[in-house]
Amino acid sequence: MFVIVGFIVAIVLIIVFSNPRMRGCRWREDRRAGPGAYRCAACGATTVTPDGKPPRRCMAKDAPPR
Ligand SMILES: [Zn+2]
Image (cartoon, rainbow, N blue to C red; front, side, top):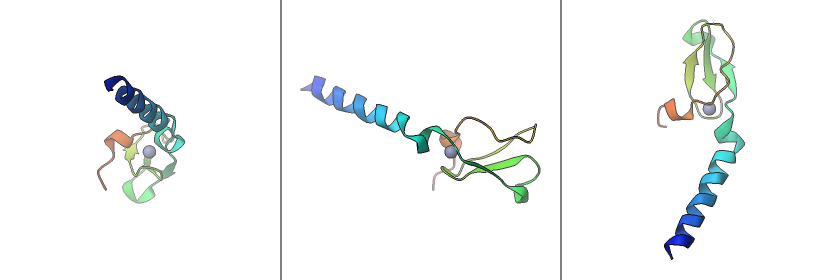
């Protein structure tokens, strides 16, 4: 029984981590927040990059709860 539950959990985790919305952030420049500030249109995370370019990784974990 526990094997089946663990198998289902594993499938759910694979689906979640393979979801493009979870993987890739769609960064938009947020000029109101200052130079080099970006806001993710997918998860709402905000960040500031020193080089002024959008970050590559998703910051969904750092996003404030909505
Ligand atoms: Zn994101």
